[in-house]
Image 1 (cartoon, rainbow, N blue to C red):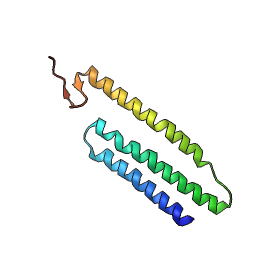
Image 2 (cartoon, rainbow, N blue to C red):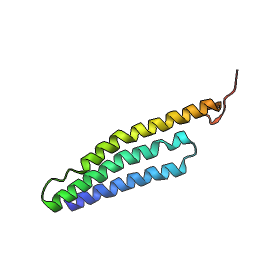
Image 3 (cartoon, rainbow, N blue to C red):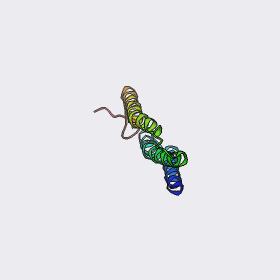
Image 4 (cartoon, rainbow, N blue to C red):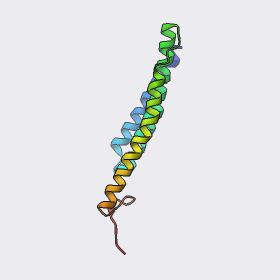
Length: 108
């Protein structure tokens, strides 16, 4: 049971790390928004499942506190990123930039 929990926690940490690397390596804001979203959502889920398995085995009873963290992360992460993207789109349109090209929009 502890090996399974360890594998889940390690794979979740690797996914979160991959999301962080994507955040560092990509150039534009719109490219950077996707890797942390995936890493946070799936990586956190795997870490929480591994934590639930480990502490349930350790205490010989179901430990379900992590479900609250999972619900909070599942609800708040997409909403936060959607608000960030909308704010960036608004900023780009106010400055006259095309968000797909990251260059000033041409009139006409």
